[in-house]
Length: 94
Image 1 (tube, one colour):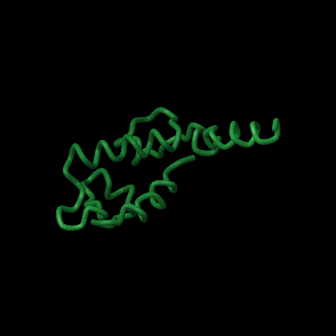
Image 2 (cartoon, rainbow, N blue to C red):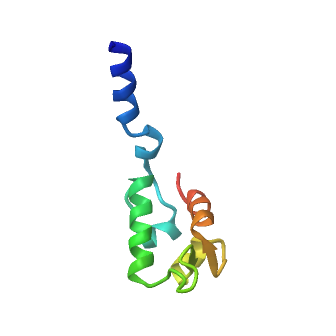
């Protein structure tokens, strides 16, 4: 029974890789700030920025339209899918 309790506790705890504070690149810092943050917080701030600036595509909500700040993060692409965005943002974290 103690073994089962360990599994439940372990399963409920957050993944340490996602909770590790990551330093954003200069380009990403213009959007999320310069302080090291966990990936979860960076994603949250990025989505706040996208919604506050109406950058989600009106017809296909899965696509994000880049403004001047996001162009640098999106490798110069004018539009990316939310799935591609995650991969591109990861390149800007160290």
